[in-house]
Each structure stands twice: as C-alpha cells, then as structure tokens.
Image (cartoon, rainbow, N blue to C red; front, side):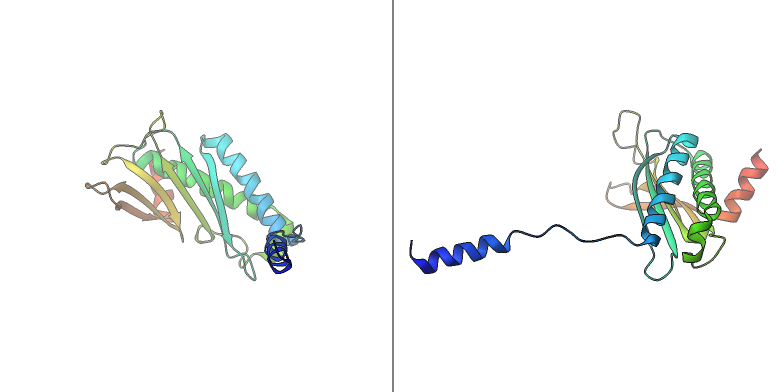
Length: 175
C-alpha cells in the first residue's frame, strides 16, 4: 500500500470516530423530563396505561407536553373517555403543582390545550383490535378523539370527537 492510500484510509477512519457528547440539558429540559416521568408513573398506577412515548414543544417556553401509552384492552367510547380524562387531569396536576417549572410555561395553569395524550389500544394478547373497534384515543389541543381502522385496514376513521369540557360533563353526569 502506498503512502497516499494509507493516508486516505487513516483520514476516513479518523472521521468516523466522534468525540464524547458534551451536551448538557438545560434546567427547562430537566424539569420537562422530570414532570413527564412522574406523570407517566402516576397515570400507570391509576389506570394501567403503559407509557410508550413522550414529547413536547418547548423552544422558548413550554407550550405543550405529550405522553403516549399502550393499553392491552379493548374499550368503548365511555371507557376511553375515562382513560383520557384521567390521563389529562393527572398530567395537568403534576405540571401545575411543580412550582419550579412555572416560569417556563407559556401559560399557568397548564390546560388541556397544552397537553397531548395518545392511547394505542390492543387486545390482551398484544394483537391488533378488530377493524370496527377503537384503536387510538387522543387528546390534542383540548379535543378528545376516538378512532377505528378504516374498513380496508389502511388508515383511520374518527368515529367520535368532543371537547375536554364536553367529555368532563358527560363523565360527571354518568356518575
């Protein structure tokens, strides 16, 4: 191997080695992660929803925090409503009770419009629910939605939608 080939190989291999990351999360990021972790654990303990994802929107201020869950049971709209409301209220409570995060929130108290919840439904054995059964429950921008798979199995159809306030009222009147 000539000198040029050896030199080129060393340059290429050296370019593949990256130094250790020096990224240090900000206080805001640490607090977002902490309240999200606490909320996910509380929601799991209250409802059995299994945390599977998180996210948020916090470029300047925290404008939204999100959690996703798996739930190994089929539910109807009434039971789905209970799960969504429980998750939303628990998440809001954890955020709003933490005084350290308040200065970073776009609005205090944090409201349903600031929280996203997604619940992916499955059968108890982990397989997909039937095409005519609810498969995804969501709460985004204060709107709760309930979806099933389209009859051809590709895509989703929204079968019901309601505001957080409407859902809360339906829960209260059912008690």
